[in-house]
Length: 333
Image 1 (cartoon, rainbow, N blue to C red):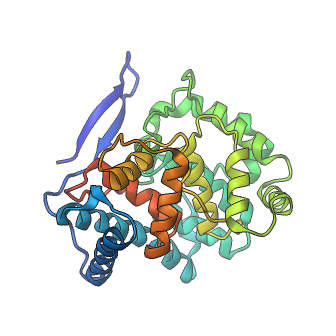
Image 2: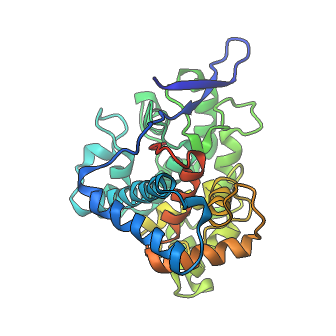
């Protein structure tokens, strides 16, 4: 049974919750991914024996669990690619259609040439995140004005106060939850993590020219290397409550959808908790093993030269694995 921990509850206000994922005693195996899992597990074994010892994955169960987390992360990357391969019907992008799907909505807007709306939705997806229990319900209700319209990019960028005032008046009617990556956020207008602060700082970062002009300028400044452009954007992203994880998530989605030609060339261990803990566990045998951020990055670079999964998958898999190193847990939100 899914468990929840209450984070905020005061007066008659609606409490916020942190969802705890279901734990599985044995690794879940997707039938079509068995060969991929075996290959990754074998590659980890060979790497540990011939290149650099991986004490955190020395035992078969830990190594197989880590391999399953790599498979889970690769499945997520494949999902985004598959979503974009087929034409998306307009109703998938309409938050009030009853069939709204945020991932497909972004793909729809890219397919129809509306890059501004696609990037705006990526921001909303990152801010609200997706819990396993309620999916994109919270995003859908906010984006769709509780059935009374759409807070699209053109409207919000020209009059952000209208959306801020609307949410302040209706926030207690919004259902769903924030995803685990944004579990400390709140809809309360008097919160020190209010949506108004997040929104206004995001609009300030993007600028009046919009997303296309903003990303084009960053590409001109940073050059043609996808990792260098990603890094320049990451370091410039001064958006309220967007820490290391939210910045990474947002930019990874921008790259996945081709909104900008970027991909992470680093796991960004500075300020990281889960990914750094996972890397330390893997390479030193302890969550708190002695290693600098530069050493961790060097080691994962070397490991990825053998696994060829990329930094987005590496970061995600290590983060999830360290939470349960010998028992696979499928984290969906």
